[in-house]
Image: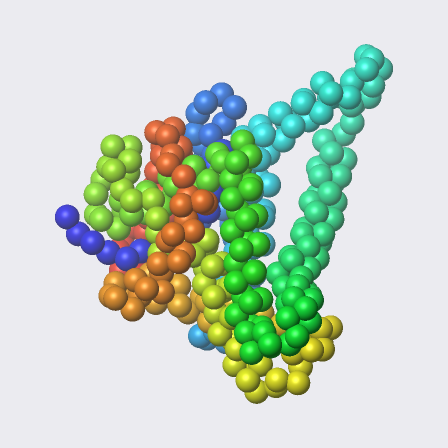
Amino acid sequence: MSNKITSIGGQALIEGIMMRGPKKDAMAVRMKDGGVEVFPMEIKSIKNKCFFFKWPIIRGVVGFIDSMLIGYKAMMDSADKSGYLDELEETDENKTEENTDSAEKKEEEPPKKKNGLLTVIMIVATVLAVILCIGLFIYLPSLAFKGINYLAGGVLTPFQALFEGVLKIVIFLGYMLAVSYTKDIKRVFRYHGAEHKTIFCYEAGLPLTVENVRAQKRFHPRCGTSFMILMLIVSIFITLIFDAIFPWLRGVLWLRTIIKLLLVPVICGLGYELIKICGRYDNIVTRIIAAPGLWIQRITVKEPDDSMIEVAIAAMNDVIPENEEDDKW
């Protein structure tokens, strides 16, 4: 048995999994008829558009934006191909349909118009989500600290960065825990487990069978959840340094919020470098760094069933390079 660290990464989708390999990318989806289909993906990565996009720190920011854009498209494609969107439409029709005329009108609605409307809805939802994230993770912690510190007579001022950072982590954990109980997200999290187990199986040099994959661990140090929690932890240290250099900005809430937004790329870049180190090396230092992310994965990475593992194997098999030298992390 061989052990290797692969550059292949993935993402859990709606009734599917996307795998991104060193040479090509693919998405496997469980179709409405019960079969599994693999769809090659032609991805135009922005990190290849400029040579300095691959520099340390900068590559983390570019990679994060890349993953968000590609992941969003893959999620929508899997929802469409798996029939999930059709099920939502049928459910909506059953709830709102009151007569045959309205039903016929919906049947005659052109598919392009439906897709266009869905795209608009998703764009609006994304914009609102970004605004909500800024409010919850940047503005709210500072506002909460300002109020509590005022009631405490200002004695908590030296602990502002720590308070805000811990509150951000609590909000993040609370949100992830809440959505993990919803039916659809729970299935996505189980596909997440199938993705991790399949990558572990490949890294162990074992044949990609359901039995071999099932036996693997489900918590991986290069998980996106680990990346998010590392970013939150890194933000605490960055804010501590910033407050030490510019202590007078602690009380200027609006300016502090703007500066935090400007620091997001730095935090993102540092978080990426840390997750990259944890994925490449296994020692006491990397284990300590990876520990919080691995613990949080107990919320976002659930145990898959065999049908989910089959989907992950199908996606993985399509992106494994013929030459192992091409697969370097």
